[in-house]
Image (cartoon, rainbow, N blue to C red; front, side, top):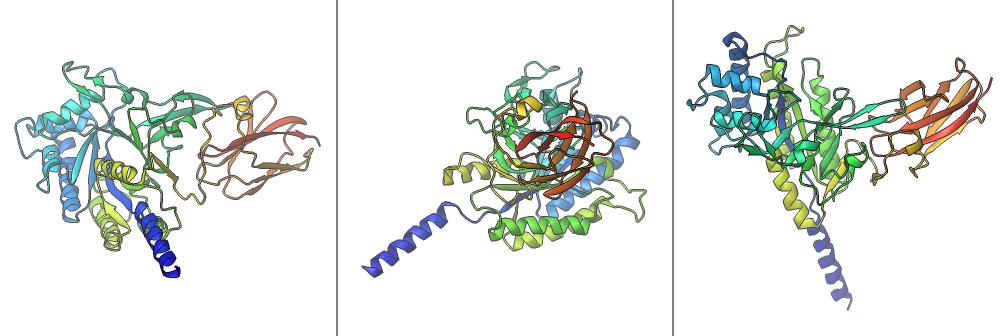
Length: 435
């Protein structure tokens, strides 16, 4: 009986282990160019084209993966100066077909920002004209626009991607996103959704609702992990150390095993050339350092190279195998937090949120107010103080669970103190200040 029980225990343990395998950080290099970048002459197009070719060759040599995310300006430059519609050696088609299997090493993702001249389906169509095939990934998007006080929510530009889009300039061509990747927010990148995982955003009414999974939705969000960016001012050693730390937490069980993890390093077209910063920044050289360091982690089984589409396919397979419909894990998160699906867009709405993590003292406050916070601390954990008219009189980022606010210059009266973070936790508290 004892032997039978032991065998059964081992079988159950092995079955549980098989159900949720040790996770891996799926990784890619991504790049952006912007609409204000000009490629209308050979002197403006050729240097970027030549740098991009070297980067594509480097990515292929290092067995990495790359999502090239571009606006029509650079694609038009290729069509104009490389005859990309008839040539097989233009940079877009060259990148797409490198490695022998089209799209396996480099994916070409359309990028779009509001304009009367074209939409994202037009961008996709122009990519196809070069001989490459546009992906069904949105190369960056805005998911919210918050304007305090009190905060009001304006839906980001991701809403149209949930439906099929007809090209403005070619009405016979349609395009539908499978994955919106990112995300960027307004003001630029101040509220990036630094999530691992993938989910279908439920809501179009507030920023928290964006994180609520809706299985009937038609588009997936793929998180960008910790959102690393390689620029002339990046401390490359620190960035590599951060990637190594995150990959190690995922692999050694510090982060939960029942989550899906995806990350990237962003590079930008504007940084492809030789920089004027001292010491001189060479994107190809610095990127090579990053790729070599990541490949050490690949050899250790901590990281696997995949494009955005490959990561999404891996997620779908993982989801089906483990019966887990979606995944979210915040960069640097230490405990599992279920996001509230309320609508905390202002002071009155925040009163509906049940997460009571804030403590204020003394009551009433005099010249100093002590604030403690037992909710999650992350990059966007913010303390705000509003007066009775809704005017913000104090704001600061919370990096510790305790802070001291000077109230010496505040008039006596009732104030609202709000703590909020990007895990969906928020709570307002009233405090009387008297001197």
